[in-house]
Length: 320
Image (tube, rainbow, N blue to C red; front, side):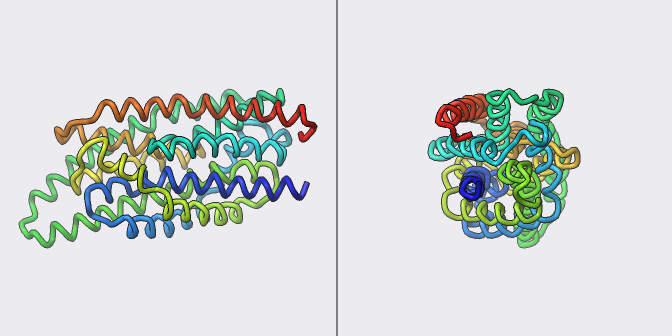
């Protein structure tokens, strides 16, 4: 049992590293893409606010991921290990390809696959709410981002001092990215720590801090490719549009946090970027959007299949 627990922690750190590598772009991709912050400045800011978010507000979503999909008692340490491993394999593949996929969907898919393989009673009502949030969050992000863009464009146009405008640009970028990173800690960290908390191995705050640290390492070491995709390949962003996309998506994620729903910051930020891009009259690269949407569809499906197959293989080997 001790070996399984150590392996589960190791895989939780692995998935957290993946989250940092892939989803850091959701917090700071637009700020880096618009040239307001350097990559190093962005990743340091992410590390600080992810830790704060995980420690202060991460417990709600951890409970949903760890106990709300498959009832308490069914998600053993072995099952948590398989769910995390299935999610981590797919997210690594997506990260190598530079696709901002949803780690949330990967882990939820992993937990569903485990539940189906073990014939556990899956809470389909909770899953329905989660799926609805996945659809609504990018739409809300786009709407919030468009409203914010309109408002701050008017504010900026009324300021005559160039130095004041430049200072305001940087402040908005840091504020928007920090807010998103905080929500990133409250929501995305739960994806890695939720299964081990649900299996009863670790307390939520302890798990949240440890996983957040691993996430910060992933951000520092392997996040540049996806940051480039979010910040530059979808559409060209200026300082105001970058802030509007960040802050709009952060508001949408905050609403999900309030209800304890694990949503995708990837979907939210892409919704925000597309919203302001369309409003500002910028060209939105449809090919990139199609690739991202494919990742959204493939992620939960692939994770379900991988975790289901792994459970069956381990069962035949007498390991679960």
